[in-house]
Length: 486
Image (cartoon, rainbow, N blue to C red; front, side, top):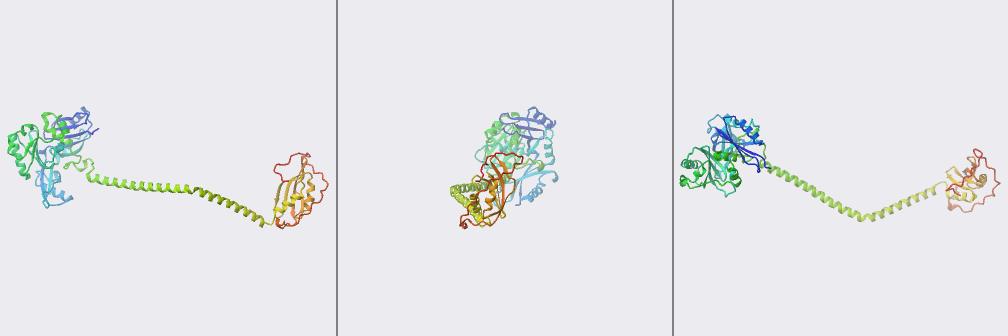
């Protein structure tokens, strides 16, 4: 949806308001007298027509302002503003403290020529009176300009005319706007009642602005057809015609009331004006915030810099991602070899641990293999060993046998053991006796390689002795435990 645009054309006796609600709603034109509370009436009309307008552009009639072209020495910045204010005091009929003005530089005729500026000035109460009209309807001003300077906004895309004079009639007066390549260089208000007076005023204006090659004269507004075909313009070298308006502007002008077509066109031109007019009499503190061309260029440069930075970061990230993918593929290609090396390393570690175990056994004081061999040969086949503990002091065995007391002499005859004795009472478990025997070393067992002779066979076993009764006199009959050593 297009935003609502509104323009107010202010004259001494009345004001004209044009509102453009959008494409689907027709143009609204209001004509209000300035003497009967126009602010209140404007608020009532907006509420009745259900138009929600936030900002409105104000265009002042040309007689309410002073428009001058000043020639100044070359200067810039704040000095130029001070020089314009100083020079303007000689051209306005009110005190300097009451001046409200704005100016813009005009193109120079030649290199080295004086600086030419177009100045628009009015009295302070004129600006305050225009802003006071917006207090009752609670509207915010978008711009405060010269109404006739907005007429070029209605022109279409036609071949550029270097110099043209636009004569616009509204309310019995005629505004003459001098355009140089579509840019306003001067404007005047002349009380021309007929074509002869208008032709004379145009010649005077051309003489004032020093134009000898005006190409065309455009006439618009009230009674424009009667002036275009007048014979008074025959002596002028310029061609007299209607302005080449763009089609959209022509469609909007056809919606304006015929009885006030001149004021309606000025209000329409004000409504269609630029967001940043060249000449704006609004105080700086009430002007809407707009983005200038320089700010847009700066923002574009910043945005381009950010995009380039993001592009560099993304490019580096993509490059690193590609490098990581290549590295991953290389690692996957080496994975079988790595696993093979890891397997060899694990196998080597196991062999090292086994070697360390063997070396620790070889360097220890107690040789387990000769003792195990000796016990295997001396203990009867029907006996079972459950546990065997060896240390530097001796050994301790537990197990089951048919006659546990027969194991004592058998172990006493061993060349390695002495002081063989029971460390716990012998208990009955079925047809077996459970025992726990402890013995000290008689001599340190030699290495298995040093054991040359076969030990003597053990003496015949003694008669079986009666085992001591169990803890409660019973004789349990457990079977040999799983994992017992024979």
